[in-house]
Length: 604
Image 1: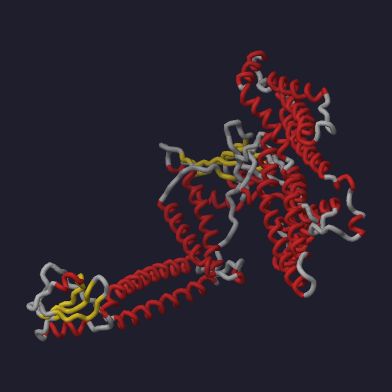
Image 2 (image 1 turned 180 degrees about the vertical axis):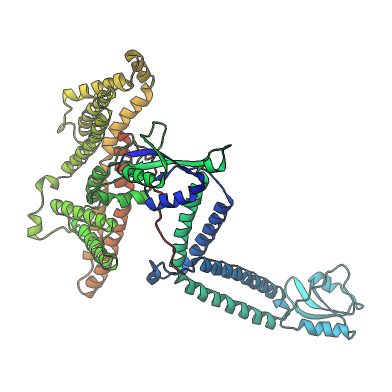
């Protein structure tokens, strides 16, 4: 359920502003309204946060599996950030030096290993040898009055030394500071330093948890400073009388706690219901079973708006069914259940509890086992043991019946959405509009059966056309009856005739879209059966045992991965678009995040 919120305004004496914020943070129940503010302190904190995030990101590639989730202890997080960033700068300088050295080596390697110092010494003694890299044509045109010592050449140029004077029209080759041998030594030294830096990064990565702790503390300090700067102040009053105030939202159940704190600290507190123009945060509270769907919502990044629906329970139930139909195999469900069991046991040993995400996987795998059992699908085997054969449900042996079931589930889920809309709109006349749309959905269901499954087996009952036409007409009459003149409201509704008609057509296609559950499940079964046939077709002997085992392992593993992708593409879509779309949900909410002290700095 979505917890009701109250909007609160809190007034404190300005001289106690920071102390009041500390108390409010320890209380941890008020979600402060976001405001765009700035201050020197806030800018400094944000800069520190950016540096810490950068340092942590740089260390992540060096963290091994054994370092993930390392204890966030120690008080040197800020110092560690400084050391990491300094090491990054040092690495950058060394990499630039290495690149420059490599370029210099490439520039002079055609000359061979010579000592630039020797040429300079000879020049100091009067023997001038000027290095040149000249085109072959220029070399061929040199006269006898231009002494030139040829050292090397290729198809295009000649390398050599001009004795005593420069060659007209040609630029001398710039002498390097170091020989090739010296450059090799420099490169080796730089590479050694870079390797040492990599080792230090790996050492720092083992303390990465301390940077995470530093980030959590910085987030709290940023929230505190933001709240402090956000507080409005009275102007043109004596300093002793200056007051500051802030606004935010509090869950209805926590209002009493805030009132007691206000009385104890001498705060002025105003509490009221949010207005239509307000946008409160969303706090969803559910029981242990319904809460299982929350990890999926977090992955998808979806939060219902405060005035939208909490569909956690219906989403969980339908998603479990969709998951089971898409995977469609009890053998696959068993594999997933074993994975969930192993992860759950490991997590329970490490943390003392099993995360909701692992519990959700366990539920989905059990649903898959159940569906695969009643349809007789175990790793797509053609023949299953007799006791498993006895568990099959004859009705589900027919593909036609499974298709029919898909449409029943689709129409049922969409009908549930409009029943929710009716309940929410009642006693407004717009509830009748939703009732009309519900009737149209029922009529469309019979039309889908006739057009998609079989015209002879599923003839359209006469009342279906009345439901479709009457439902659409009812919607037009009552959709805008939110007060005012009845006839004018009908006119408003008919002004949207084209979008409404397209929505009606969309409802028809929405019901048909549930056939994807059958189609994807059938495709997965076909792929699994193909790999089974490949493995079974190998000649008898060790080749069948080893090769067949590898084929089955690869094939069914690939099919599991593809089914997981299909669940995201199809199973999630049916809930987020078809179902939630008929509920009118835009997932426009943001999560309730109270101003609270979540982490304390470690003692020095």
